[in-house]
Length: 193
Image 1 (cartoon, rainbow, N blue to C red):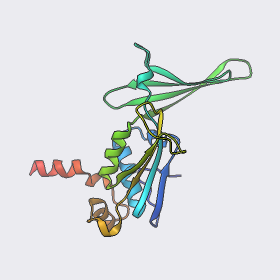
Image 2 (image 1 turned 90 degrees about the vertical axis):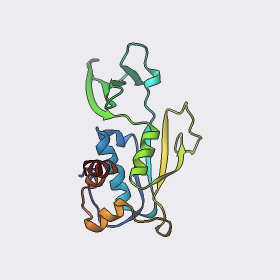
Image 3 (image 1 turned 120 degrees about the horizontal axis):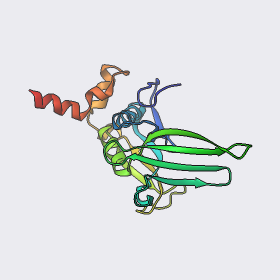
Image 4 (image 1 turned 135 degrees about the vertical axis):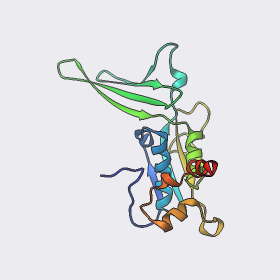
């Protein structure tokens, strides 16, 4: 058991991945950025970070309705409720499973939806650049109508990269709290001087 935003594992890897909308389980932007920084911290030079995620379904919302169904069958209904659409981007998935007696049992889970462009910025903060984005695992083209994406960000090769704040943080302590060395923190510190 561990927290994908902060857990440290010995070694460097060529691939780190999060699938099935996992990044949205981190319910703040800071936690999501920390996850990207943590992924980069575990990658060897030239390594890749892959995320599969839904594109937020806000365009599917009927006027005046905060929720949109993502699955409807005889025994299951899934609805995403967009509770905070502008500030924190907080939603919840509502899952209704039919019981044997015909009634439904509800399970809810909060999540923070995130746009592909925002994920690209998180990757850039962590020292990675977008290498590929597809609509699905079959590498079909990603378009403005794609309901999901598979994105691949790459850490620069060792010979082409200059030391980043992430590498400096690694040298100081492999378990260093990377959120403390974020560009915003550095900027705020310089602004106070």
